[in-house]
Image (cartoon, helix red, strand yellow):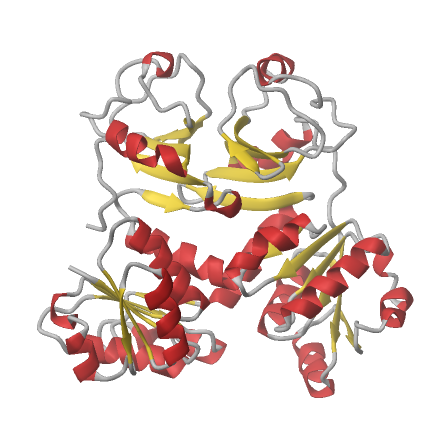
Length: 454
C-alpha cells in the first residue's frame, strides 16, 4: 500500500525524502512541473504532474489501495478538497491536511467524521510557536523535544567555555552530579555527531543533547552547570500569524514583549489583540530602530518574518549588538545547519515542524521516530518494550545493543527513569532510544518491532 503526498513544496518533498529512505511506497502529486522534476531527479518515489483535487488523478496514483493521503500544498482549500475527494473511495485512507488559516483551524467541527473527516490537521505556524516557547523555557537551548506525552524532555545545549564540565569525561561527570537525573545521549563536535561513552571528554562549545524528566528539567539543568539567566525581555521581528500568536502567548507568561512590524494596518491589529506588548512600526533593516529600542538589552530576539534572508541578517545584527539569544525562522529545511553554523543560536523551521508532527501521527501506537539531532545524522525512537525483545529482563550492561545507540530514558507507569547499566527494562515500558542513522536497523532488530505504520 502506498502513501500519497499532495504537494511537493518543502514539507511534501522532505516528507517524501524521509519516507522513501524508510523504503515506503510513496506517490507525490503537484501541479508545478518544476517541483515534480525535482522529485523525479532526486528521490526514489513515483511523481505525478497534476492537481491533487482531481479524482481521476488520485485514481491514477492508486487512491483505492492507498493507506494514507497527506495534503500539504500551500493552499488550505486545495488540501481540504483533496482530503474530501480522497474520502469518497470505497476504502477510505487516513487523511492529513496542512491548514494555516486560523479561521479554519477554529472551526473544529469542519474536520470531524460528519463533515470533511480529516484525521489530522497540522498548522505549522502553531507548531513553530510551541517550539519557540519551549526554547524560551530553557535559556541557551538550541533544541527542545518532548517525549512520552511530555514526561521526558531532550534539550540541546552548547557547552559554555567557563563550564566546570569542560575537560571532564562522562564518567567523571556522573560522579560529580550523581543526583542530576540527566543523561548525555549525544554530542556534536564540529560536524561530527556521536553517541558518547564514559571515557569521552567534553570540550568548550560542544553541543550536548541531554535527556531528563520534563517535570524538573529547569531545576535539573541549573544543577548541571547550566547557570543561564532566565529570559524575561523579548523582541519579535515580524507581526504575521506567528509573531502575533507568539506575542500573545509570551504576554500570558508575564514576559516583556516588543514586536516590530512594517505594515501600519497590521500594527494596529496587533495592538488591538495584545494587551501589554509594545508594537513598533518600522523597518528593522535600518539599524536605528534596533538601537533606539535597545535590542542589546533584550534577553532574546526572535525573527519570524516571511523573508528568511531578512530573518538571518537582522538576527546576526541583533546578536552583534548584544542580544543574549537569537532565534531565526528558516523555511528551507536544508539551510538550517548552515544558518546555525554562522552564529544563530536556534533555527526554527515551520516545514520541519510540520514533517515531525505528521511522522509522529502516522507512527502513533508503534515506534515514534523524531529526527531531532543535527542534520538528521541521528534519531530518537520511542517504543513499547515487548516481552520478546532482547532489551527486556536483564541489566542494560548485559544487553548486546548497538554501540552507536543508547537507551536514554524509560517511562514505567507514571515514573520516569533515567537508566544506568544496572537498569532492567520490563515488558510494557516506554523506551526512549537515541541512535545514529547507521545503527537504526540494529536497533529495530533489538526491539523486534518493525517500522510499520499499522
